[in-house]
Structures are given as structure tokens and as C-alpha cells.
Image (tube, rainbow, N blue to C red; front, top):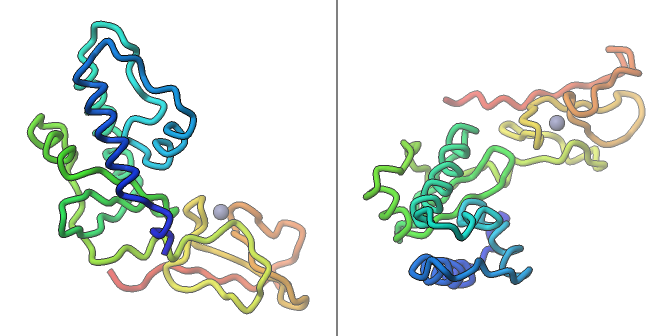
Length: 191
Ligand SMILES: [Zn+2]
């Protein structure tokens, strides 16, 4: 899984910093590049989307921005992983994770901004099943549930020459006759 790199404590520190910034509407957004990079990973926690420091109620804009990110992830077909501590974990089909802290989830809910969420699953397979548009190990065959970053679920390889696999959408085998191509589709059969 790709969860190892996620540091909830760093995320929490950023959330506290955001909360502090919201408490003082005159405080300018933190321009620290490191902070921005981390926020970028946590799509929806405010990275790069801080409202301008005008008189507008920044807290509301900030919350609405997170609600929008959540709504987009759900619309894209994200799965929600169950979390005992109340973190909202959404995993997009391409494997990207959206993580929202429990108190922000509560705040969104209280403000009526929390989008309708899908039923939680124990462990999303999306990150594990995310594939690049091409890879070079022929023995690493596409498995049920695998999908390209484009959402494609069809991969092909050359029948006669040992080589890797490619996404049929990103890299269609236009230069090859159908007889020379072995296509594997990875639709999941279970509901
Ligand atoms: Zn693709």
C-alpha cells in the first residue's frame, strides 16, 4: 500500500496552523514551500487554495473548498476506508488519497457541507490495483480490478514478442494487427 508515506502528525500540525490562521483573519497565508508541498499531498486541506486575505469569511471558504474536494473524489468513484478514529479516508480509483481530520469532518457536518459519502470498506484495493500506462515486466500480468490512471481496464501485450503491458486507452496498439495483440480486460466480476 502507499500509505507509508502519509504522516498524520505532520497533517495535524498543518491543520492546527490552518486553524490558527483562521482565528486571525489578518494573518497572511504561510508561504513556506515545504508547507505547501505537504498540503498539496493532502488535497483539500487548503494547500494552494487559501482564500485571499480580504474581508470574506475565510473559514467558510476554506471549509467549502474541502467539501468540494470531497465531493469531487466521491463523484470520481472514490472508495471510503473505515477509520476507527474518525478520519475521512477517500481513495480515488487512480490510487490518490484524500485525508480529512476528524474535527474537520465534524465541522463540515455541522455546517451542512459534508457531501453524501459512500459506505465504508475495510480496505480499498484502489491504491494496490492502480497501474501505470505501461510497464515492462510481461510476467506481471494485469489482474482483476487493475486499472490505469486514466481509468482504463484493458491492457495489451504483443503475442509473439516478449515485452511489457500497455493500457489500451493510453497506448492503443494501432500499429499492430489484432492477431498480434493479446488483450486482457480487468473488470471485476463481483458486485
Ligand atoms: Zn490508460
